[in-house]
Image (cartoon, rainbow, N blue to C red; front, side, top):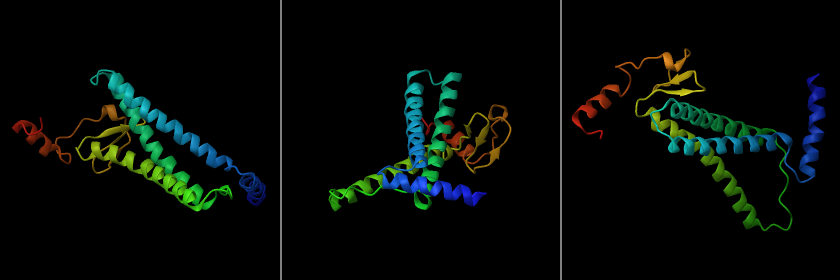
Length: 176
């Protein structure tokens, strides 16, 4: 039965490439990435517009971090799909080789940003020794230990990585 499904999909993907269009899955992954990036910017701007000490700010920050992780995962899926399954339309014959090279470099640069930006955001939190929530129920700490109970119920432990260093620096006034 899977052979029938594969044989049914193959002509559709090839037809998309021949018509000068990307296949439907590539298009869907593209727009999902766009929506996630819009969510990233929206939550960042919303959080800056409100008081950071409110529960709404904490919820917005959780949404921001969760969409960042999803952006990373969708970017990885896009690369795997593109490398193994996608049928890409060819560049127009009239497009100079230099312009094709620049277009490819631009595309790869955007992929680098899709992967680096979420990693820098997660690293900013994790290397400070703070656990953070994802999807409102998973808390992740510096060592990437995952707690399956709701993150709101977890009490911070005094002996967590960097916990003593941060506390000591705060007492001496270096962390201000």
